[in-house]
Image 1: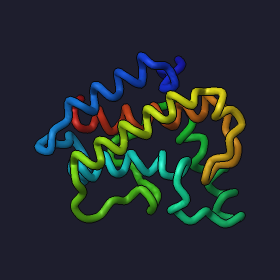
Image 2: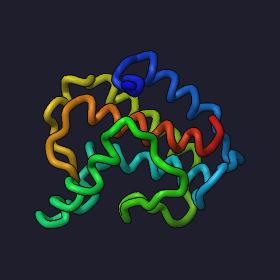
Image 3: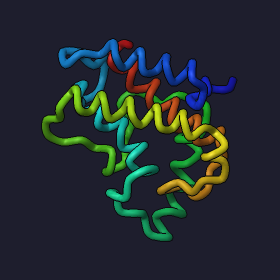
Length: 152
């Protein structure tokens, strides 16, 4: 079953509507992050695309990531609750809820505006070139997982 297309206006709007249902008091159903940390955590996926703030893995680590992690990240299979995460995605300390929410929404809108064709064959930070379906799965699945975590 194909995942919803995050590059479409309707799906992007649906995700943003779910984000807008969150409040600083929203509680997780599982995991250790508070809601502001979760929003910041979700922004990391987009930072890896649009910002040069995370170190790139070396050739050996990239090989391992492509071999072992990529299939889990870009497939249609949902993530398991409380699964392991990459160090870049671990958010420590307090975050500003509104700032992180606005930043995530802006990333989602930018990605939708660029469109799926912009991502066809685009090099990912950790997994090499991905097709637009793999990018879609990575973006949508991660957002859906964490919005579900916070019951929206």
